[in-house]
Image (tube, rainbow, N blue to C red; front, top):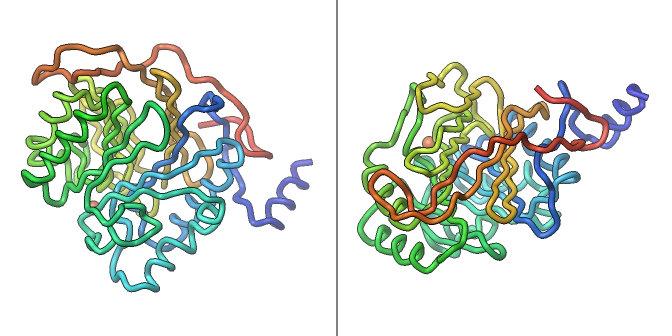
Length: 314
Ligand SMILES: [Fe+2]
């Protein structure tokens, strides 16, 4: 039977699982389902393997869109580069109608805001609401000026009780050896996040995966290893809840009611990290706590089978 599965996988070009796969998300009907990639604009085996895994996992967990945490295209950005570094590797997802929402990294030309598949509506920073209850904010951390801060303040004010998820390139908190926390951006953005109850922040720039302990009630993830990897660069600190700097990775995320489930998966289909957080209600914001803090869930994530022919997890 195993031989048959391997043969079928080879014939149809599906990725073979190494240690196996299992879905740790509830996969509820009507929930908000998405994936995250970061620092993804580098053609090669890492990018190809992650793209293949995303396609395989989507057969089990039908995510509708993908957040990009920046450095979407490394090197030259001619029309052919958009194809080579983005459209070709992610073609099966694009053909399936999956939408990609990009934020700009330090390697990205601002012209990317005009590229239709990045869904930036011609703006370097923007927000969108894919369906009820959740709103996303793509921030341009290359240059945080007053104009952007005023825009963010206005958009967050208008977002009411929605989940508020910000995504951008430079991590405000990071245990990376190469970059570390982006102090300047944190100084500018964090007060706005706290005031309006941002719940989750997802960044890139560091070529690894790190889940941080909530900082002032905000959940922080760093994912910048979807095509490049900086092995050994994660120096775990007191902020680190989990980290991986030895595998290419992407994330699956699901929001259902006041709970958000996450699962980080490697290029080999191995689950690296999984769990959930819960919104704990509204509080009076201060400089030490966000207006809508999240808390890690004590209960374990549910286990369900992953794509066909796989089982188990790391
Ligand atoms: Fe970067």
